[in-house]
Structure formats: C-alpha cells, structure tokens
Amino acid sequence: MTIDYDSKIMSASYAAVIVRLVKQYGITESAMLENTGIPQALLSADDQYLSVNQFVRLTHNALTLTGVPHLGLKLGQNLNVTAHGMMGIAALSSKNTREVLEVIHQYIRTRFNLISAEYDVHNGVFSLIIEEDDDAVVSLKQDPNADVAFRFALEAIFASIHSIVQLLTQTNCQELQFEFAFPVPFYLAEYQRVFGSEVRFGQKQHRITGPEAFADLPFSFYDEATLQAALRSCQSLLAGLPVPGVLMTTRVRNVLDVSNGNFLTFDELCKRFNMSSRTMRRRLESEGTNYQEIVNAARLELAKKYLSDTTMSIIAVASELKFSDPSYFARIFKRWTGLSPSQYRQKYFEANKS
Image (tube, rainbow, N blue to C red; front, side, top):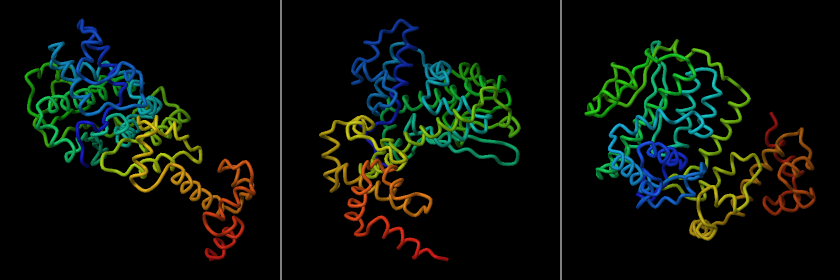
C-alpha cells in the first residue's frame, strides 16, 4: 500500500476525545488545533477521517502542550466503548471476550486505517496481535513526529482494549499478558500502572494473550440483535474505507455491494468519502466511468441474482431494485443484457439444469 501525509487514516471522532482530554491540563481547543489543518466541525464528524498529517500534528500538539509522555495511555483509558463508533457498539453487545476480539480483528481498520489485528487460539491460549501496516508506515516513521504519533496510537489502542475488557468482564484482567515490540519506555511505571507489573517490551509483536477460558466469560450486556445491527454497519463502513492505491471505482462499488439495493445518492456518496462532487466526478471520469454506470452495474448484478430465484416474480424483482414501473425495468434490463427478464430467467434455468 502506498501512502502519503494526505491519506485519510483515523476516525475524526478520536480527535474530539483528545481535545477534551488535554483540556484537563488547561490546554484550549484552539491551541490544540493550531497548525493541524483540522477544522472545528470535523471534531463532531464520526463518519470522517483525519489525514496522516492532521493526526501527526494533533498528536505532536497534545504531547508538547501537556508535557505528558504517557498521554496515549491516558487517552485509551478515557475512551468509553461508544467512542469507538459502531465497532464499540458491537463490542458492548458481544457475548464474551472472544467475540470482542473477533470484532476488533475484523473492524479495527474502520477506526484506524493503518492498523490491523489478528486473533488466534492455540493450545488453550488466545492472542490478539496488533500490527501496523509495514509497507505504509515504515517510510512515514522516518519522521520522528510520525514515529511518536504511531506509538501514541498503539498505547491508546492497548489501554482502551484493557479498559473495555475490564468493564465487560467485571474483572481486573490480571490473567492477560500485554506485550510490545518497542523497547522499555522511560515511563515504564505508567505502563505497569495500566497493564500490571508483567507487561513486556522488546517482543516480536504487539500482542495481548490470555487463557482461552477467560475469553469465554459471559458478558451481562450481550444483545444479539444489537450486535448484528452493529456488525452490518461495521461492514458497510469497512467497504467504504479510504484505501490508498485502490481505484475509486472499486471503492464506490464496495459501498454499493453492501447496501442491499439501497444505493446512496451521489451527494450521499460524496459525503461518505469526504469529497466534493466535482472531485468525485473527476476521479471517476479519470477511470473511464461515472456514478450512474457503477450503480447500473450493481443493479444488474442484483437483478440477475433475484431473477435466479424462482420464488420472486418479475414485479417483485423490479420493486426490490426500486423501479416503480415493472415494464420500465424490463426495458432497462433488456438494454443491459439483450434479453427480457423472463428470457434471462428461462436461459439461466436451462443452463443450470441438473
């Protein structure tokens, strides 16, 4: 993955938490946002992302103005579950720690797009490995400010996971082991205060481990309906993530593919990608397409899927695809495929006879 300082990487809602945190040290919002390029309105936009440059500058301001080197740990402890957006709601509604770690594994990129998580269980021990995207981060970390900012992010992530698991299990998490790949920091005592005396440094990976039985402790907040709704939202967010180096056409199509036919308007799409309509049109045109063509292609795939289901009438298919007039749907489908919906259905079942 190629990346630069303008690439969008972190949910903007975290910036608001950082600003609130440093107010405890007498630092004003205007001082925190100075030279960051972050408009005040962005602080309340959970569906938007900070760029690398904005994230690095904000972190630099926070650490410099407060003089608190372990501020990342404090941030993690101050992040309540819902501060993590729909990923947090999914965690809060999960059955046990195992499900929480699976949620983090699948959707941590919806919150911080240069971090991935791998969850595994082996010989009765679970592990959650938190990894930076090496290809993307290595060049950025040549900048000392960026290196410090990514350390800050890792501290916040680990401290937040610790706090959330404590809350949901109603335990002190003494059975968990926290490991970090970087050397022992000079503020080791702060790590031990948060994670316990057995926290380890200089390891091969950033990792949390614990006994498998701990991962199966039941949660009192478990709610399957809320969990599934939150997971659907997470999947939608994941599909629309800003991924450097990926064609805009692909990113737009990913969003449409998880919408179940409830396609965004063009203005809604532009808002999702934090992009002006003019820029979006230009990006798609540079790839030889436009939004309507992408929507039509998505509609065609759905139409073929629905027509392969014998329980759905042509009228029902047209309705699912938001065509108010079934005859208009039939004309459009024939324009797309050269076949009427009935002809396509007949041809499909003839080709798939056992």
